Length: 457
Image: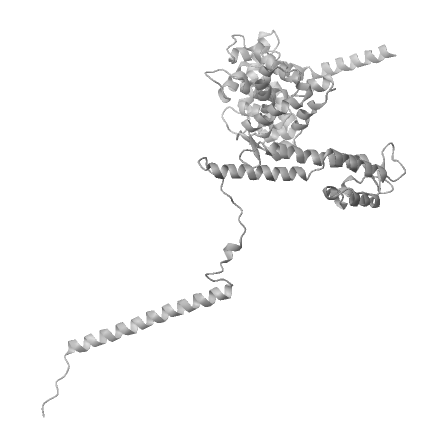
């Protein structure tokens, strides 16, 4: 019997390697199957699958603005905004509806009269709300009634106060819609050119501006627009929110020019009036001695009482926009608004930037001394005995009471309510003289008033 041949060792090794690979492949398949099953059950447990993805339930909150080349989309956007604004306008009370509301309120007044004002109770107020129509419904709520409720012993509100409240709300919405028509981007803000267009088209509706020549319109518009942007755009972004325009009093001042019988005093104090605009532009022309339409530092030095220091004027021309070292009308308007409104934070911000030479964000003893030295030099030129800087410095820090006893920030100036006095002391000899002689001036005023009283008697 032949001896059975044993398998060669190499064949045995090959079979073992092949079997181990099969086992490895089986393990990989098992892991893949486990992962697939886990993913399936986890997705079902979370309540989502490939067909129902939860993120698709989030409402869309961003809509890309059409590009300049997308003319059709731009036209569609403009048209849809116009339709939307028209619909909002139709929701407002018109003059006839307001008149009807007044008649209803007057008919439902509840005696007795408080002073000279007709009053209405809550029950009568609700009755008027039911009769006034759907447009008035939002005004006849408990919240509105509570806002207008004061110290009436019968729990009533003034009919006139309520009607004025409704008128104000209607006016605000009308104005917002009117301004929104000029919002080209449709983002709730107006650029400088948008506001210029709005005011230019508003001019014919303002009787107080009837006397303006059309050649002056562009200068008037520039003068009016600068006030809005100086105070409402402190970061100089070139745009202001419509909401901010409505919240400030500037639009009230502008629309006050609809009153045909506006007093002379009101016109002089209103930046937007024709006399005020002509005054500012006239000052600019008078300062422009070489008649090139721009102001040099020497020409600007004659501004006001001609007592602004040369150091301060140097800083104006260093920090703010000039053309070949000269100032145009728009930059001049910012300058005027800052100096005529020194109590306002925006004006203080303008001047503070000039005083903060090293852009540190605060004024220290060195910067105060640097500017006051120019005041001392002017005093010598006028034959006056210079005042000690140490005394003035101590008075400034006492007035401002800064958080840091060695530094005065813009916020310190604003909080102290003494910013106008401090800046006047540092930049204007006349302002410093007025501060130094304040007690004498007050005494003279009192003497004058006493004399007037004696004359009257």
